[in-house]
Structures are given as C-alpha cells and as structure tokens.
Image (tube, rainbow, N blue to C red; front, side, top):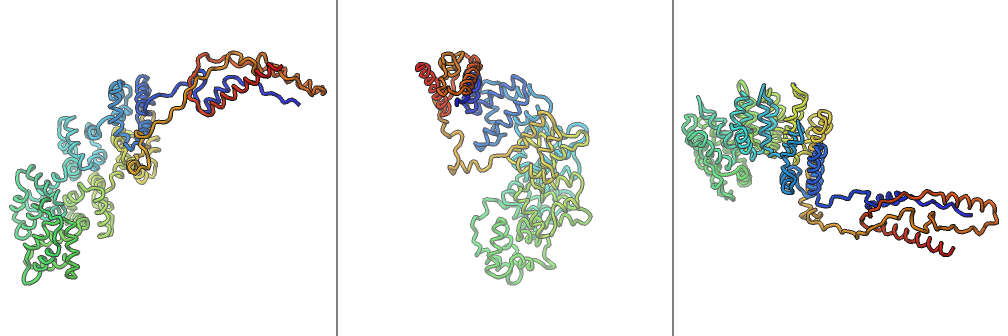
Length: 614
C-alpha cells in the first residue's frame, strides 16, 4: 500500500532549522553579531544609546553589562567604569562620556550616573554640602558619611571639599552643628587620629585644673606610632611641645610626671624588636624587693615597650616568680604617700589594651553628675573595625553588658546616633543611613543621600544587603523598588544587586582558572557560502516539474489505484516554495549544516536518477 508522501516544505522551514541550530540564516535575514572585544561592544552600544537618547540602554550598558565583563577579571565594577569605560570611550572616538551622560540624562538618574563617573570623595563632598545647605541640617547624612570614613580618606575629603567650595569642611560642620554631637563628628570625620588626640590633650591641660584621667587614657592606649604623630600634631596646632605643656601643670608631678613624659616621648625607633625578658624580669624583681620601691626602674622597663611586649613580659614574670606582675606592682605603689595617678597609669600599662579601654568606657559612664564625654569620644573615635570588635567583646566579658546598649541608655539624640555609628559595623551604619534616607520628614526619599550611600560601595555591597535586612527585616532591592520608579529605580537596583568578585585573583594565581585576557581565542570554523534554491525549486526534485511518480505495481486493487491517484493529485497540488532572497548569506559551517547540505544534495541526485530511468 503506497504511503502518503510529505509535501516539500517551504524555504522558511530550512531557515528556521538553521537558526535553531545556531547558524546564520540563509539569504541574509539575520543581523551579524558585533565583531570585537566585549569592551568595544559596550562602548559601541553605549555610544548608540547616547545618540538615541535611550536611558534604559545607557543604564544597562554601564551597570549590567560592564559587571559581566569586569567581574571575571577580578576587577570591581566601579573601578572598571572609571579606568576603562570612561577613558576608552573618548580614546575610541565616541566623545566625552561625562558630557554625554550629563546631556542625555536628567533628574536623580543624572546625579546617580555622574556619581558613578566621579571620584568617591568628591561626590561625598557634594552630598555633605547638600546636607548642610538651606533650612536645617541632615544629621543622619553627616553621621553616615563622617563616622564611617577610613583613616586614609579623611584628608582627601577635606581637600575635595575645599577645592570645590573654597572653604574648610571643619568650619562648615562647626557652623551647622552644636554641642557634643559637633565634637564627635569633627573629631571622627574632620581630624586625623593624631589631631584628634592632640585636641583631647589640650582640652585636658588648658583651662582651670587638669584632667589627669584624660591624659592617662591616651598615654596608656596610644601606640608608639600614634603617640609620635600626636606630639607633632600638638606642636603644629598649639605651638608648643606636648611634654613641656604637661610638665607645666602643677597636678602633674613626681613619679607621675616622669611616667607621662616617658610615655609621650615614646618613639617607634626606640622600641627594641626582641627585648631580653629575662633581664627585664630581674630588673622589675629587684625594683620591688627590699626597702622601698625603685619607681624609676619600673618606668624605664614599661615605658619603652609595646602592648604585646608588655603581655609577654607579664607571662615571663609569672613563669619565673609564680606571681602576677600587675598585683605585685600594685601592692608596691599603694600607700599613704604614693601617687594614685602614678599607680593608675601603671595598672593601665599592665592590663590588656582592649580590656583597659573597656574599663575606661565604663568609667566614663559612671561620672558624678553626667557622662565623661571626652572619655567616651576619645576612646571610640578612629578605631578600626577589627579593633572595635575586640573592644566590644572585652566590654561584654568584663562588664557583662552590651556597649551599644549602654550607649543608647546613657546618651540621647544625634549624639547617641554618632557614638553608636562609631561602634557598630560600618555596613550596619550605612544600612541605617539608607533607611533614614528613605524615610525623610519633608519628602518620602532623600534621593541625594541615597545615591551617595549606594554608589562606590561595590566592594561591600553584599555585606550591606545583609546588614540592611538585619536592620529592617526587608530586602534592600525590594525596598528600592517600592520607594523609587523608572530608570532611577532600575539604576539603584543594579547598584544594590551587584556582588564583588571574590577569590578570582587567588584562583587565577593557582591556575584553577584562566584570565579572559589570557585565554586562547576560540577556533573560527570554516566559512561556506550557501546559495538559496532557485525559484520553483530544483528541477526534478519531488513535487517539482519533471518528476514522475512511480507506478504502483499492485494495481489489481481498485481501491489502491484510486488511493494512489488521489495521493498523487494532492501531492502535485502542493504549494510551491516562496521566492528566496537573491543575496547569498555567509554562515559558519557546523556539523549540522554539513549534514543538512549532504542530505539535500543526495535527495536532488536521487530525483534526477529517477527521472532518467522513467
């Protein structure tokens, strides 16, 4: 019984099949892919988007596509935009990227895109100016920026602000803030650690009386490097030597005066890298034994060592004599004629540094009438995040309480927020700033502050998302979508969704991955020209002119004959394929295309052979 023959398919069927196999379409119906490096493609698309004024494509190319190129190379997106995209956009003849972005975008989106192309500290200076300009002051913005600066960012921020507005940032902050809050933000964000400590020492010495506790706190907890810089800063700010200024105070005298001056003169070059602890233990033992105490010997041993060296000295003394050095010195310096300040200073030197800072903080909370604000501020400003983590831990161990909880309990207002910002992790403080920026009392969202807190945060964005969720119980991306709209929303979401490349550098160094710049180029397959079939199909092909269907030998059955004739008539009535495009199309040959071409040639040859036999 003859089977029904499938009629020939139109040309578009083969075209769809080739496209499904990843081959360029026949007849030039598909647009060829961009032939160039990924960065060249981004620059090309970015330039086209600028010409068209398509802000959606501008955001997509600058924020989304750039991340796909720079992350595999182990480069942060924000760095890649400024060092590669911004520079090569002009070098490749597309124009000035900053000018084009400023012209083609507007409103908050323009501010955000310009922030991406600007220096971080220069844009921070602009945000601070907006926070202090006009009616009222945005204290949350001041806290979030000034209390989270890295030590190496303080001076460049002052310079950036002065270059742009031709006035001092410190003077601007002083004019817009007041009280204890002003003291915190200035010492934390406008002064370096040596300048801040110099001001604390001057406050302790100047005026009526002398704050010996403030001097002891700084002399005990300062490292030799910081103390050396503090002494230079004091001379630069107040025109006199710190040692001379302390010596002139009548409350600073005797052994206490000698110890303070020895600690103030501590220089990093005078610290012995590997001291002989056995000799030091013997000197201390001789100073404490017998009639009286040799305070000068104790000062000579303890004033020239780092905190880690003092810890090793205490352990060596304990091993040698079976007693605690701190307790022995305390008993030798306690008496009717002994100086309490001298003893307190020695006890501070013989206590673990972070533990002693925890004692000083608790002491500052327990003032007679109020908190010792200079004590709180001086012990909290300019602490690195690992250092602050140790202080918080020791505070909990020693006092069985939370440092942040005690700050909230004993302080209030913006002063409390500023101190908590110094103690809390940097990402948590920024997350709180973002939350405050989206819940303003004048407008629903402070877009300028939001831009300043989300741009240039690529390295810590993942941690920032986690801290925001801890703080609010909501997803940062979800909140941004709810609070903003349009292309500005898309840009903020692209910023907040970014994750910095981690571990790529080490994997490249270990040979576990190959850098995209060093990877061998992909092998280019052979190129073949495929001509479209002629109008009306190939001569002699099935369903075309010249093709004769074989007679059915089993014609004794009438039904079969009628079925065959009906099939043939229906087959001959099959529609002819549409006229193909005249231009040939170059496509890359693959195994699938070679198989398809061979099958087409084989079918055509069989058709010619069948026609000749007939």
